[in-house]
Length: 121
Image (cartoon, rainbow, N blue to C red; front, side):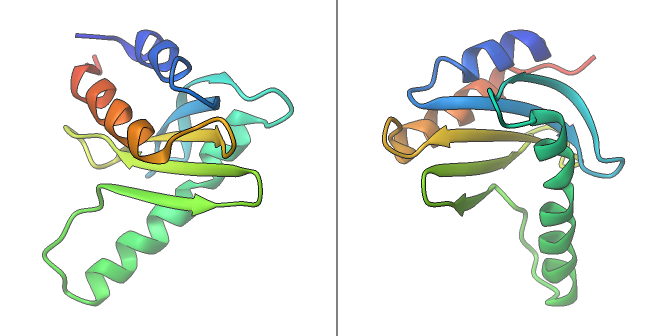
C-alpha cells in the first residue's frame, strides 16, 4: 500500500503530468500536492472542490443511484482530471496533464491503479 506522497510521486510518472493534488472535497483542504510549475496545485485542488460539489448535488437532485468515477475538464493545452478515491468519496485526486504529451486513456488507467494502492491513515 502507498501513502499520499508515494501516490503523488507515482502520478508524476504519468506521461504529461504537470502536477497533482489529493483533496478532501467536504473541507476543500488539500492533503498533499506535487508539481504544478506555474500552476498553484493547492489552489487548483481546493478550487475543484466546487466542481465535485456541484456534480454531486446534481446527481442527488436527479435521484440517480450513481457514483462519480472521474470528471474531465479539457482546456486548450491541458487536461484536468478529477478522480474520486475508491475507498472514500469525500476524497479526490486532481491531476493536470499536458495535452500534447499525455495519453488520456492511459492516464486514467494509471490513475485508477495508483488509487487502488493508496492507503489513507
